[in-house]
Every structure is written in C-alpha cells, then in structure tokens.
Image 1 (cartoon, rainbow, N blue to C red):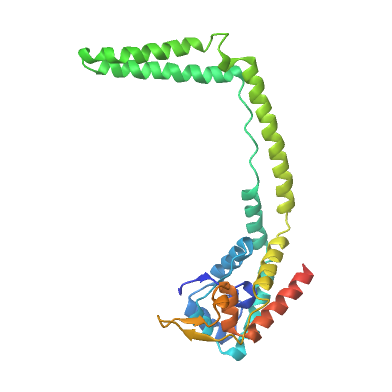
Image 2: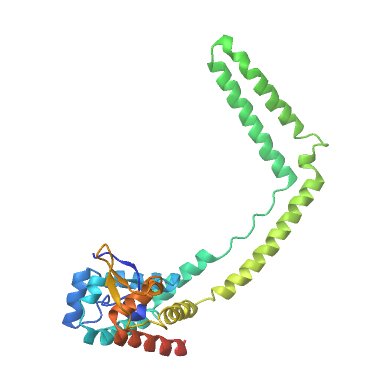
Length: 273
C-alpha cells in the first residue's frame, strides 16, 4: 500500500477513491493502485472524525488524477463518507470511544480493620519467607536473618497497638474525607463527559472535523509561486506559505475546483448537522 500520511480532510480528497461502493471502472482502478478496501476506508473515516485528523493517499497518487475530474470525485467520496457516518458501524465505534473516555469512579476507602488485616498478612508472609530462607542457608550465615525477622515481628505486634496513629479513628476519617473529595471530582468529570460525549450522538465529532477543515482551507492561495530549493525539493517562494498546514498545502496542489467542491459540501453538511 502506498504510504499514508496526515494531509487532507475527508471532503478534499481525505479519502479520495477509497470506497469500493463507488463502482465506475476509473475509481476501481485507482483503488487497486492504492491497495485499499472498503474496510480500510471506513476505518480511516472513523479515525479522521474521532481525532480530527486528515489522512489521505500519497500526493503522487492524488496528482495522477486529471484536474477536470477531481471535483466530481470529491463529491462522490464526500457523499460516501457522509453515508458511512450514519451507519450502525460508525455509531458503534462512537459508543466504544465514549465508553473509553468515561471517567473512572474513585475506589472506596478500606476500613481500619481491613487495612490492619492486609498489613498483618504482609508481615506474616514476610516472616515466613525470611525464616524459610534462613533455614536454607549454612548454619554460620543464618544469624544474619534474625534482625529482619525480629523487626517484622515487632511491626506485626504494632498493628494492634491502640496508640498506633496509622490505624486511628482520625486516620479513618481522613481517608473518608479524601474519598468524598474524589467522589465530588468524579461527579464533575462525569457530568462534563456526558456533555462532551452525548449518548448516541456522534455528530459533534463530524462538526469539529468539518470546521477544522474549513478553517484550515479558508485562505488557500492558488496563485502561490513555488520553486526548487537546494535539495531539488519544491517549496513555496513565500516563507509564510511554507509554514502552512499540510492540509492547506495539499489543497493548493489539488486545485481550486476540487477545494471549492469540498468546502461547499462541508458547509452544506454543517447546516444539516
């Protein structure tokens, strides 16, 4: 497959010639050239919408398309993309994204008794493991483990010390207050999540995507001059154009007719959304 890179939105050749449902021979031939099937195309549509990315086939593939044909191809592909965004498959992908973005609730704090039990088991296991290791060592080396075993036993005993601040009522109250603060923060995040990712309504992703495209391509200068640099690479004469986005540059390459076709489709689609 020809190398793909971030360059162009769905409307202006973002998925140009990537849908097997477009059945004319010319389209099929180009599909064969870029070795892309309908599944790959649909995945690209979703990825672009979900991340506001602009993936497309390589410029060499796009430039091989006759200029007079580009506008009609843009319209055909744009219609296919629009149809796909209303399919159950697209909605299911959105549901998965929405669920992945859902904030996680805080973990309920353990009680003092639970923390004591966990600490008790930790030290009991440590004592048992150290004693087993001690017995495996030569007799003249076993004494080196005695201090560690003694310390573990002292720490084990300290768990049930009523004056131990680590297991006091104040500590339990502090953990509860922290949990309540985390719960309040979680509830705020959950409310924002429900606002940002409304259930069964992925239209906002498409709106953001289309608006980004329109903003990126609103000032393409199709009369801009280019020249070869010292490395024989074509660059814009104006340095400010060299700093433009890849979307802007590719729209310049595909021409005003194709760009206008894409912008018109995007504007009409936004009105519907």
